[in-house]
Amino acid sequence: MAKKRHTPEQVINKLREAVVAIAECSTLAEAARRTGVTEQTFCRWRSDCGGLRSDQARRLKLESSRLKRAVADLTLDNQILRAASEGNF
Image 1 (cartoon, rainbow, N blue to C red):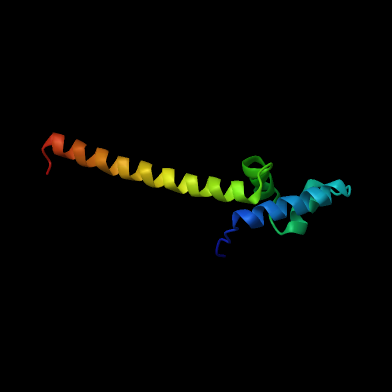
Image 2 (image 1 turned 30 degrees about the vertical axis):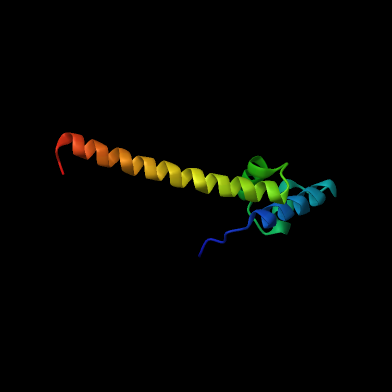
């Protein structure tokens, strides 16, 4: 089964739906099931972006991807320099 990626807006909306369901005296598992995600995914989303607004979550995701690209570029540069210093070029 293919993974389904949720946008930050969808995550925030599903978290809000689950909070409403929990307030209606349902359990965490029932609230997660109503929103269509597993209990583990719901807990991970809540810890990652529980108090964020949708624009903040979007900005956080963009910043994270930018930093990942920077780390990948620096790692590649480091490997090239290490290979050149060993004389394996």
